[in-house]
Image (cartoon, rainbow over all chains, first blue to last red; front, side, top):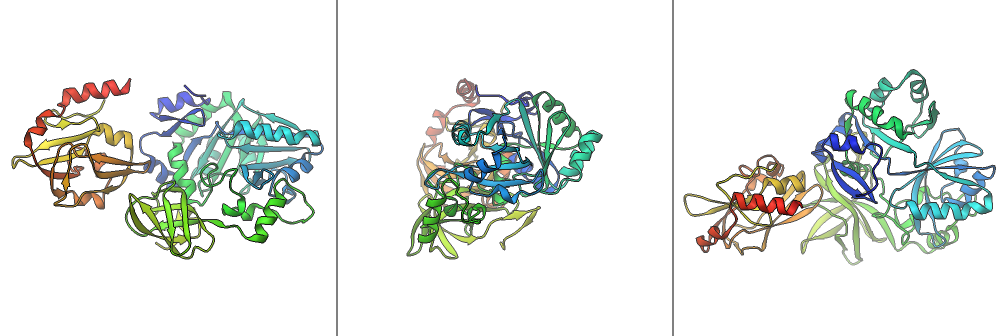
Length: 364
Length: 131
């Protein structure tokens, strides 16, 4: 048996099909992954993401620490509560993890990192913290629930008490704020829909989950979370990028803050070199023109330009077509072939996202 | 508990076989198999006229989760495929033993059918697999 989140009993009671995910027993679905997916695009669904790692970073030099630690620049965060998506790189520019960091005060940031990278992330955060006298405090006693979909905001606000509602209601996208009782409410997510991600004490999690359920928010498994994020054009660590690939090869160049030029961050030198020479590969979106389903690790064949590989592939429930991210040679043009069971099928190269706020973003 | 009709034969790879009046055999996947695989999104069927061999991959069902081979429960020639599944693969989830059938074969040796598991044996097999 793996680790259990504070919502484990809720998943079992709701008929969740539990699978191992990075050492945690997590629900892949509660019956139908596709129905759960559509429900997030059309209504409101909730995900238990308590397996993710919440880390609080404090100290007078925490800003300097993060400016050195992250490829994106926390100086972009001017207002308290503002969130930033960033990669954390090693010296050769490879991605140790991708993460969200919230600026709370000049001496206090909160970071959320992946579950699968927990041990190495904490070791890296600690290792770099010493020079800046930053305190790195993991918060395993906190649970985390993501509520996503066009109706998510309204349903959450209806369930929250007056104090927490007053905190949550004015939040702009990509902002978070504390409410009483060590609750942290953020208007962020991983689905391409509006909604909240709420970090709360483990002891409060089951009751809040039940309240949300009673308000019509449907439990949604990690299976739908994966197809939703893929449609939304969001990378998955370990599939779309890892320590052997840089942000420039992973469609994440937009998250690298090159300016100011004198900001030294870990991996900068390697990235600059790659930018100068041009990365050999790029990550693109694919739409399968033929019938079939794109899957991770299928081979991509580019006419006269070599080969690539699908890093995340699935059937898109919203588009009713097979979609993928693929790492391909940089010269790849508007189309390619994907090898599926010995046959070469045609795919079109497209620019993600595939879906945003329930609507297709590409021509089918 | 899975639905396991008593009038069908089964194999350990979770396909079922139904003997029709004309001697042909209809093939599909069991209710247990469709439930394990989850929402079907694509089905790749053999060609009509294709010879299939018992225990060899003859079709593919793809759920949102993964692609899985479908093994022919017995050898023979494919005489019909369920073309309706091209537009509605979810029928395999909804009606695994009925409208969700995959293909029909004319068996090379009808006696092969007798060697397959009956419903009781398949139920015992599922129970043993679960432990």
